[in-house]
Amino acid sequence: MSTTPKPRAGRAHYDAIVVGSGPNGLAAAITLARAGRSILVVEAAPTIGGGTRTAERTLPGFRHDVCSAVHPFALASLFLKSLPLAEHGLELIHPSAPLAHPLDDGRTAVLERSIDATGETLGADASAYRRLMGPFVDRADDLFADLIGPLGVPRHPLLVARFGLRAILPATELASLWFTDQPARALMAGLAAHSILPLEYWATSAVGLVLGLAGHAVGWPVVRGGSQLLSEGLAAYLRTLGGEIVTGWRVDSLDELPAARTVLLDVTPRQVIRIAGHRLPASYLRRLGRFRYGAGVFKLDWALSEPIPWRSPACARAATVHLGGTLNELAASESTFARGEHSERPFVLLAQPSLFDPTRCPPGRHTAWAYCHVPNGSTRDMTDIIESQVERFAPGFRDVILARHAMATSDFEAYNANYIGGDINGGAQDLRQLFTRPVARIVPYSTPDPGIYLCSSSTPPGGGVHGLCGYHAARAVLRRWP
Image (cartoon, rainbow, N blue to C red):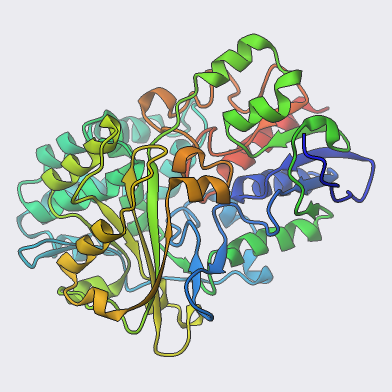
């Protein structure tokens, strides 16, 4: 146990203490504070935010989102939509198009807000894409409410069943069944690759369909000034509700916290065992110990002298660009990390927020970041491989780089203890762990100790900046309290 003196809380007893100040921890705290409960949030790092932090990583004046930069779920989350975050400094910026996916032959699939406009970039597959996505866009809120949360009886069973028949398929199969040409197949493959799973796995289509649906229904915005402003908006709102936040406090044991009716842990199973293992039965700890972490990521931040020189002008319209070529290429890339191998031509997810938010860097300059998937705990430097993939679709890219900052899997885990082995999703989100994370329980956020709940992305609905893991965990707490 650490001997470093801990910061002091404002009182001796709370209704609830939340350990961790990522979006899920703050969401849990806000939900409880809205119910009139006394709340303390404890954060190990000097600043709040977890996966939504922004920092100067390359050169002075260049602000980079350390993890999440583009937020498809910021407006798809019914919880986040319910908060007055604009009153606390949050401004979302929508790029001209949510996503672009260039191919070597010069064609570029573009996810537009309009289904018809998207179809114009998909050639012969325009009508098939409309048939696939169209039935769900007008009822997007209904679908988001049923899908982005814990497993339960859906409020719109026919709609969910229709969606599920498509979503359960492996992404490779869905793309091949519905589409005949490369742009549409590649677009769906890139969307599904956000699952950080091999695209031959069952239900990888679910991630692709939900992200595509979000693009049409609510967009893929960036936060003006950086993702840190989302965290700060959540924290500011929490304080108006009477909640307290203490940073620089690494919790080594629940015993060091002030008294509380309930503790909610915005951490993954490995830290739960470390922090709360002495209060949980051995059988539950064994089940937590079998929790499977997913692939890691290797990430680069760049300070740029000018915008990325894309061969396809359409790429400059999107804050997010998927690089890696065709469906077959992406499938081959995403199968490597499951075998403990590295792809030499990986799927690269790139964000270029400064094209739409000039506050990120000095005038006339730009920022961008990109990452690829690697085996959990990988020690390989993927800098040259990632930059080669960018150069493939943007000749001359290396010439505009002023400085770069790299994060390997060990750097991610050092930055945020939840990112075990570089896993930014809080655990593998395959079919076995999609709704039963971290273990199979009727209330997945609860533990055998009625005073301990889990609220991290290791609980449903998993990774992403939506706050719903924390929201549903807090709702479970409130249902148990008189």
